[in-house]
Image (cartoon, rainbow, N blue to C red; front, side, top):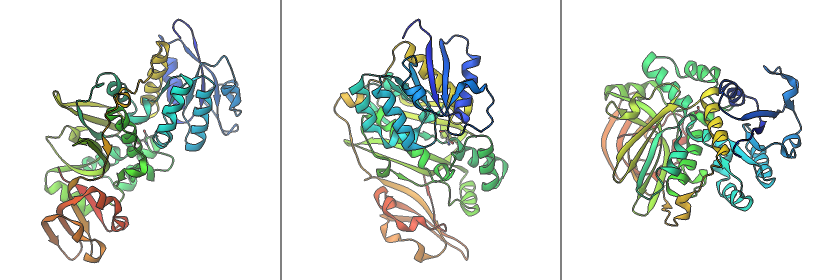
Length: 393
Ligand code: HSE
């Protein structure tokens, strides 16, 4: 696509679509222009000229002059339909839809190789942090041991406001929604589903292993209460929602769980909607990437970077898949956790390997102990709002 102007067909004109529009307008050096934007509601007031818009997806998908389809919509099934049709029609695709990508990873991989067209999705994982491209290009060997970090801007914003400004959970969540960080359904953020989709994508690019989102355990910050916050502060810790995947004896495990984080941890100082990703590899030890993980222009800039990469025919090579020595996915790993509850019948402490600390009062109880990740994934008792879990470093 060198030396030509790329015609873009965009699906969706919400927070990220408008962010992309702004970033594109302010970036002089890129040979790309928006030809059409497909939206759902033609009656909604839009900040740009109505001639851009259509409600007919085929005006983009069937237009031979459109080179790149940019998919930025909310609905997972519709997004997959658009992306797969575009790839079948030979169009390069850029997407930011983490859920759609994580849930359809294997099919999307196959569609790319069958149709020999690029599909880029840097914005899907940590918005402005170029983590997928780094995993693909720089860490294209098998020396990577772990990828972990904060990959949800909304929950990091909420936790920052709670710990730094004593705001209530509800007020902080409302702010994250007003600022355009949260998902349309914010339970995806606060229950840890959104960061799980991102971890599933990163795991593929880091280790070459396809994992279905339902295989990965996620528990968010939706049960957090003042008692937990005081517990964290009493140990000179903050709380961060961390997505984690680590290679271990030929296997790889992954999860998204709230963690007690001490000041020496690089993730401690990742505030507000910023994300932070720590990579650990055999010879370089730890490397740290940080940047805005949510918001229209931050995410739009990653989308634009993908569009720009298409100009020099960039595509993911999925080298880790092709190396053919992928670790198998497993939830068999021990975690040291704090488990808070109200009454003993709400939890099953026999699931623990050992308990090193026990606390009881008239209001709350907690234990600190070691438990297998698979046991946590299967535990029905964690659904009780009176029960909360934090991983200890
Ligand atoms: N809701 C997401 C977040 C948006 O808060 O991180 C960016 O993926």
